[in-house]
Length: 127
Image (cartoon, rainbow, N blue to C red):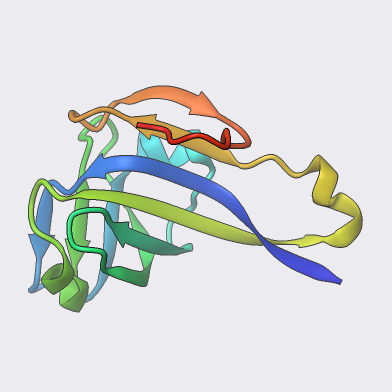
């Protein structure tokens, strides 16, 4: 049996742009993608802390060091610039590997800089 487990999470990133005229996806700084093990074209879930919207899309690599989080296409209607979002990627993990599985979680500041990398999240709120 396989279980769907959180693989990667970018916690409290800020939307830098919402581009309705692009085909679709979310553009993320490739340096940040590397840190949390998210690949270009990988499916992700986006959670908007400002309005509660949740949606799925795929990732496009943005320029390294740009701190970009640009929501593109129709999903751009679900966010506004400066909204706080969570980006989550999942993986299918074999039952016998569950105890070995440790996600990569990036805690972001208001400038889209990683301030902390953690594995399994604590039971308390992470700000």
